[in-house]
Image (tube, rainbow, N blue to C red):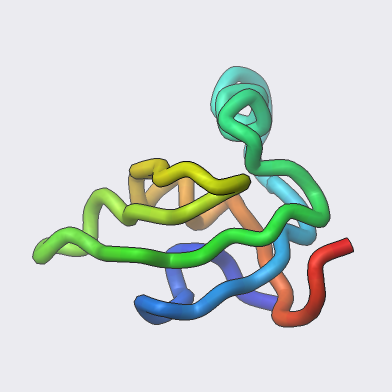
Length: 78
């Protein structure tokens, strides 16, 4: 298992778990990042922060710190 921060550009994975707590975890879930959702890494900024991902058909930029909280696995969407 890995997290979104470690995914290379152009790779898709399935969200397995969000490890954060409190407001940060809730904010990620409000943005559509939930268990079983496909996430695709589109771009990474030159210094590595933020990371642009595609979730549920829209593009989203998230901080590297938040991307570490999103554990993913490779496989098919549930």
